[in-house]
Image (cartoon, rainbow, N blue to C red):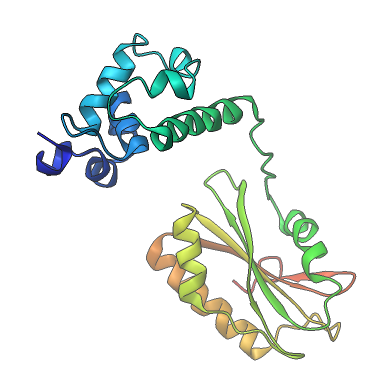
Length: 225
């Protein structure tokens, strides 16, 4: 029986999508990497056979060469290279340091992160900082670039990005090339719109910061949120 004819819940790819990566066995993960089996056995069966040959040990599997892997019926050069490449990615990941994620505890922290992106621009740009529950920065992105006087943000794109990164908090920011720190009527309106949308999605708008060449204005500090 090939993977195609297994119950949907047992198919590695479908199981991955339905239940997540942690639900997969080692053989199911290897089957996904290979993509297909041979004429006589499914990718899952082939994966079990390969893993059994190394006592189900990933470290031992990583010692096999492409020629070693190609001794298994159904494993050609492409599958062998795919397996070795996946194991090499795992090795490199294990030796890399986890990227430092700064914590934002006040408007000054946010300004220090954003000023290099926004302080010297001649046109307005709209940026967002996405944070986790510990207020650690998990993503920073530019959302729009406007004309000389304004930058309009698409709220849908903002929250799609937040959801994609499992963010629970957002700090938005834009620059005023004119040097004025006074929020415009449009700044206040879009801030409230984002705040209300965030409340619906349980993603808190923590601050909106206006940045000029040498200073900033925080909506939170000014009581405008």
